[in-house]
Length: 227
Image 1 (cartoon, rainbow, N blue to C red):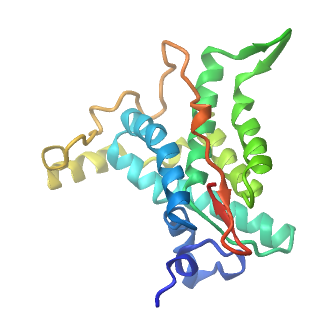
Image 2: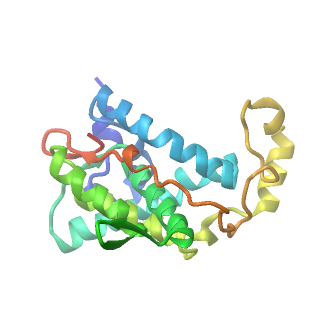
């Protein structure tokens, strides 16, 4: 019987030329139905917001491309290269934390602090707090995996990774050739997206959606991405 978890999970010591596909498939495989369900519930509103801002085609290209590959390679480098370990991770919560970091940067630009008692706390650290909480409260979650997702999310939010977005000219050509706007319900075209390639500041404070955070965790001796 085909073991989809073994096939698609991110296993650091197996990453090589013939297994690079794992850097894109690991967010799609989950340890259990509940693991997948929690991640879907957490991911959906965040991904819909990103899609509305950047368009459907850009969202698909990024999340099945560099926004999966870069955190996966970063995780592999640290886990295998620096720590000498081989902990397997899987699950879509790495995308959840990537998106939460993007939202945190946007929120910080318009609402830099929130007040806790008499202390001013930067709003951009909210995803870091969520990572710590999920690591403590949810068994077998991947702290390192989530941190890698946050790094990429902060990089995108600060503008350093925006160059990864595919050229709009190519996207318009694909949309026109395939008539995606006419064929797919709720499709967001390049010209319908809310912001331009490099974004604009929102006019109101954006909610980070902290209650949507879901952890990455383990399968057996491996870690899953989600509770």
